[in-house]
Amino acid sequence: MRVIILFMMLMTFHVQSTEIPEDCVKVTYFDRNSDGKVDREHHDSCLSHSSFELLDDNFDGKYEVEVFYGWGPTKKTIDLPVPNDVPIEKENSNKAQKKDADKDSAS
Ligand SMILES: [Ca+2]
Ligand SMILES: [Ca+2]
Image 1 (cartoon, protein in one colour):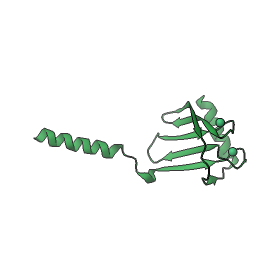
Image 2 (cartoon, rainbow, N blue to C red):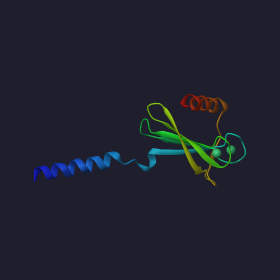
Image 3 (cartoon, rainbow, N blue to C red):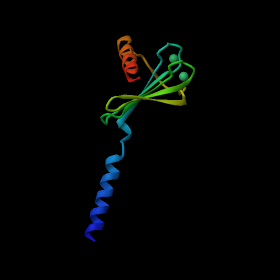
């Protein structure tokens, strides 16, 4: 009986520890080429090493690159439509240049 109770406690802790709170992730949308359409989507997480972003580098309305900022940036190819009707953040040029440099170092 003790083993079963211990197992149930461990499973409960495991489930609780792997759930991400809703307010933990902040999604920010950017328009890098100023055409009024989203072309970068940044997901910033309160959990370390779990932020990522989606990039539409050829500005055709589809994300083709996902950059995961874990222990070092890693890229993978995706095919997702960019969202419409989302608030677009202004991005200062120094930050945008740093992001482009980070993106280049990931490749
Ligand atoms: Ca754009
Ligand atoms: Ca694209």
